Amino acid sequence: MSHVPHELHDEFPKHAALLHELKVSDGHFQKLAARYHDINREIHRIESEVSPASDQALEDLKKQRLGLLDEVSQVLAKAKA
View 1 (tube, one colour):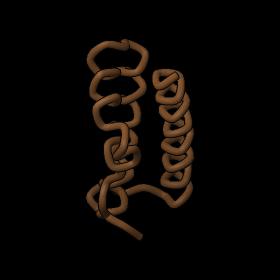
View 2 (cartoon, rainbow, N blue to C red; view 1 turned 135 degrees about the vertical axis):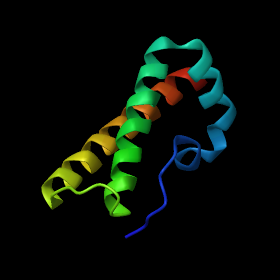
View 3 (cartoon, rainbow, N blue to C red; view 1 turned 180 degrees about the horizontal axis):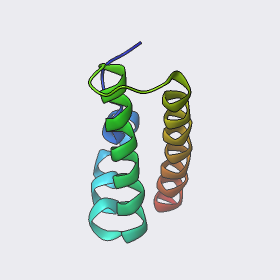
View 4 (tube, helix red, strand yellow; view 1 turned 90 degrees about the vertical axis):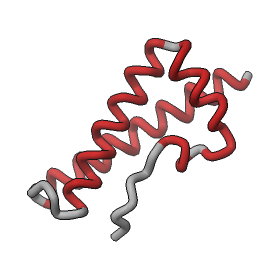
């Protein structure tokens, strides 16, 4: 188990500039990135044993994070096209 947060720029290192551009210019992407950040931080806090949570709660958060990563990936693909 890794206790390192999965930041968007770590997940999509080749798209750092595009991520930044979308964060400042696209309201939908701003909300998506903020939601990802919040869930990602909560997962990190649970895995680091800062915040207590059941295994099921942690798994649910991880599923939400994966769903958000899929959405981010789709937005990046559209923005590149």
